[in-house]
Length: 414
Ligand SMILES: Nc1ncnc2c1ncn2[C@@H]1O[C@H](COP(=O)(O)OP(=O)(O)O)[C@@H](O)[C@H]1O
Ligand SMILES: [Mg+2]
Image (cartoon, rainbow, N blue to C red; front, side, top):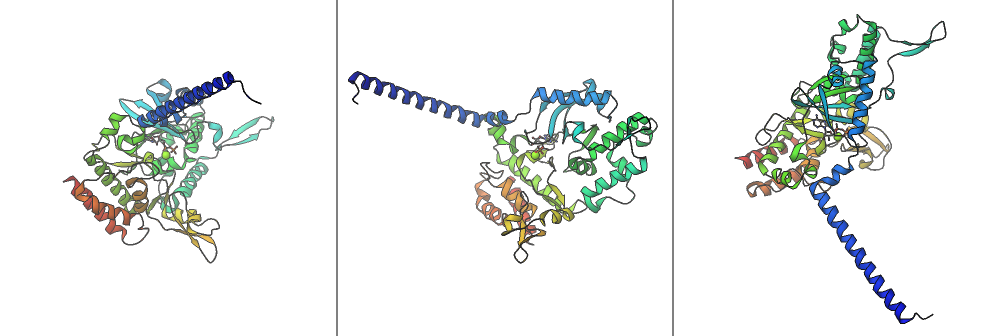
């Protein structure tokens, strides 16, 4: 069928107009997206924790405290407003991480689950003679051995003989708490929920180590740690243009890299056993807030969910069937496939140095890499040493590569 000429003209004009409008919309959307990505807004928008949720979370915690179900040295301050909520820092899938203000300093409140029901209770429920359900708490000695075995399961053999484990992990005075049954049960509930969080066990046990943030106290299932933000240098995508420029100078980045090398050495040498980090990304490390990162950066390991002792990492790596080595990788820790048995070997073939070089120093997944744009005086040598670093694995060359990297960074700052 033929169209009348007017219909045809109308059709051409409208369809052209529509396609121009569509193109204009697409360009506008692209400009908005580019702008949002550039200023870091996109990342902030995708963070879905809200102030409203955080306030509900704190409200629930304080209801439990008022009902004497939980306690802890920070409950009073959290529930009276002396510790003041500022912001939430966590991603939708992670644990709850809140930024707060306490006595003129920022602190970070953390918990794996923000609800008492998510933790296995330390008491058992039994019916009494009248058929009424009663909570039966363990005896003090039994409770202490439960705490000890929980710590041992996570930390392995490093718990020292004679350590009073309860005192090591609790912020109150355990013997004094025992005098009042109700508050003693609240203490047991609280310490048990803390001991159900691997991260708390690690941080509290090692919190005098310079690369570990200090644990300042606890209330129920929440614990407070020293504020050590990833900061302007570590998370450039969160920044506006001004901050991005501020994060650019080489001096700051080289100092942070030197701080990271110190942390790698500490992981190898200054804990009871060698430690392995299997989740090496910018947001999992922070800078000690009272030091000048541009001259002397102290890097803290703020997310230790994927940090394991040598005796544990073997167990983790040696699980499952495989065809090739990469089938045995555990996040950033690389494993080996035993080609005869087609089972993963209980060993790790990557080193911390290698993973830090690949994931933090060099560009990765759209991140620019901490050691981007080095001064020309070291750029060639640095590229060579970083290349070697990404393939070093557990080989004895590690020490030389690390020394060479340190030498170049120091040279670049002279
Ligand atoms: N001690 C801290 N100081 C400052 N910011 C922190 C601290 N701990 C965590 N954060 C912030 O909260 C974010 C999430 O915390 P993290 O422990 O990494 O949780 P997740 O297990 O969900 O990754 C971090 O990426 C960081 O931005
Ligand atoms: Mg993290």
